Image (cartoon, rainbow, N blue to C red; front, side):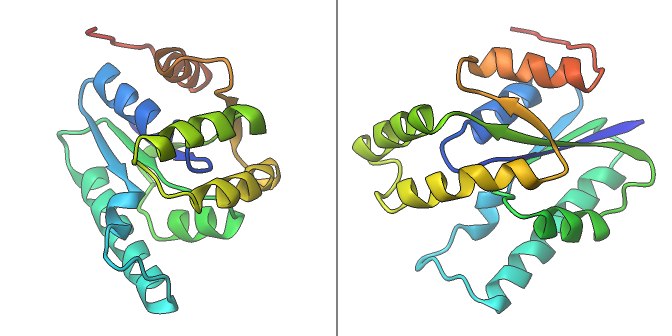
Length: 173
């Protein structure tokens, strides 16, 4: 049986790093970062671009789900509203897989420190800080398992996810 991991969380919580770690720990694993589907200049959020991005994400994820080469598919994105998760799930063919809905969270101080470090390094723009802090409490209302990354390393967070999902890890590193 295939496993689909949907990892949400605010910007800076560690979604991409943890997703990459899961990909590396699991044999036969594909990884898609939802942000890749938003990589445009200028960054434009309209109903049309939202639908385009959702279509692209669902197309790629359904392709991975159909492909016999993959047992695990890891997807991460800022999924801060239940509507986003519900729409995504309604458009995916998950009949032959187990879906793991997870939200990565951390305390506001840790989130702020992580984002300020990224901003100082030129990896993010300053406007992300307020948005991420505003999104953080929204994850409490979602129908997902919460994984607090505040005191976890990337590796420990990935291991915690696998344990919670009942998957034995195959860590080559």
